[in-house]
Image (cartoon, each protein chain N blue to C red):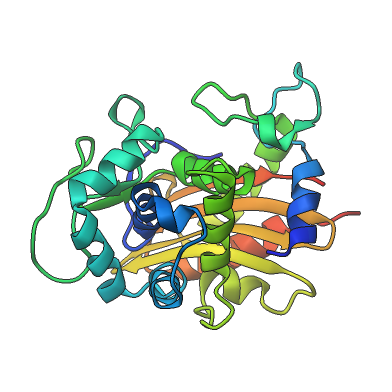
Length: 215
Length: 75
């Protein structure tokens, strides 16, 4: 990992925290009683990065409650640089709680995003059943992937499946993903602040995928 | 995610980008913990550094502008 604990403004990536909090705070959803409409709306937030849906869920739960869930999992630790932070409802205006390390409204570190995908893969987020449902929501086959960053890089590679959450605001260009392909399975996270950040993300995904393919 | 894929995951071993050379090369994925003290795999770390260095040079970026992590969940 390179600069894993440096907090960055994370744009839409912390929507993963809203998804986690939803399942943590809605036991029925974690027990397989998620209705089709809510599942679709969570998919719009997680896969299509829909701000309206993200704000709907974060307003329902409250920013402090969402962040408490993240803190309880250790996804934000001010003593170690911070981590995943949801301090503002997505969209314009409203309540804002800056993160203690960087005063960002939405933040993340590479290490904590890798941990998020790892624990999701391990079935350790809320419960194995809830983790499985969250993975299904990230997959949401009825919602198209946004064809950019890691997905743009790997879309033509045979058998590659990507669960991901990306983020963009001005020069902040990020992607984070659990990537599976023939003979390989890995987590890749890259947080970039540069006008050519998307180009970096495409290239780093291709080169890491080349590196991890079986010889 | 299919059930068969989930089963495969449950059986897979992780040879992780963060394991130290002194630790076992593989461990059950379910037992793996990523924390602030997790050691890096020198080989994968070196390759990731090389990729990042080349891309930063290509796109005129500094180390302040990129942060990257890879965790290899080898099956």
